[in-house]
Image 1 (tube, rainbow, N blue to C red):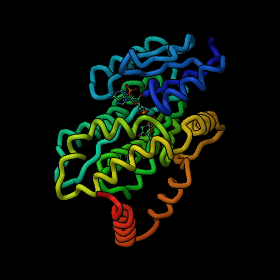
Image 2: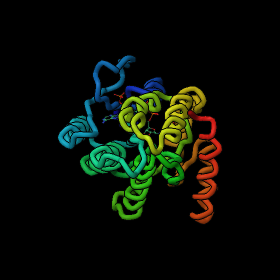
Image 3: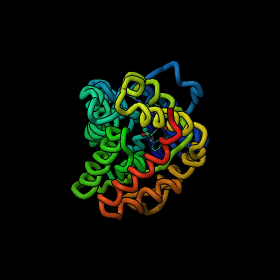
Image 4: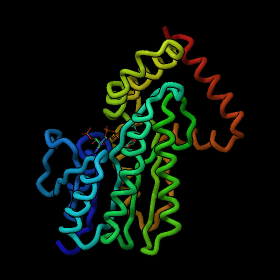
Length: 275
Ligand SMILES: NC(=O)c1ccc[n+]([C@@H]2O[C@H](COP(=O)([O-])OP(=O)(O)OC[C@H]3O[C@@H](n4cnc5c(N)ncnc54)[C@H](OP(=O)(O)O)[C@@H]3O)[C@@H](O)[C@H]2O)c1
């Protein structure tokens, strides 16, 4: 028990987090804490996994979750901030509350969780599941892009500033086949269905999101990669997963006006078939 690496994962009831939890639980080398917000979704209920409640939209819950972990262990070796959501919509009509919600879930909550876990973080590795969206090229999901970019900026600052030898890694995957896309269509339904000015663009966005559930990378392969990165002897501060993520990074080297023109052209070509 004593020599086991302590791994904390949020978002363990779906997609990447669920796969990661399963992967670590197959080995005796880890003591795993897995965060959930809905107890009904703990389908695999793995015996050697300590499930803890965390709702990233609620500060009290974030503090309680960190307190629970601190009461159980003196050190967290690997923290993987996986949980996240997608808020979509044109900036013109984006409800500010939805924008705040996006930053709370994808950015602020992870900072708050880490702040509260600080006493048990020392020579630890923090892995954030950011996204290729952090490069900021995707219109109509700008809340998601901005929240991921902000996450990367804050944690990169923490990497430079911290006095506890923390290693901080941003993993930026491209599209992965997980339920997040279908969830995003449901949770943004109001805004995606009711806009006369951007009807074609939003219809494309919706169809594209739904098709991501099939055409994205296999989540098991992505989880394997993340686990591999989490156990490397030496890590870089940023990793890309998927060809689309590599493309997004290359695009980001171009001047902003050129990027904007390319994105506009790409969007125009892709929505020309939408009703
Ligand atoms: N899928 C992709 O294409 C892709 C690409 C790049 C990056 N990512 C990032 O990867 C991470 C995992 O996404 P995924 O694709 O695995 O999506 P997913 O299947 O929807 O999983 C997201 C997880 O986060 C949890 N969660 C969402 N909001 C929460 C909240 N307020 N409090 C606590 N937990 C919450 C969900 O809980 P429930 O199970 O209760 O819903 C779920 O367990 C996200 O940060 C996402 O941005 C995904």
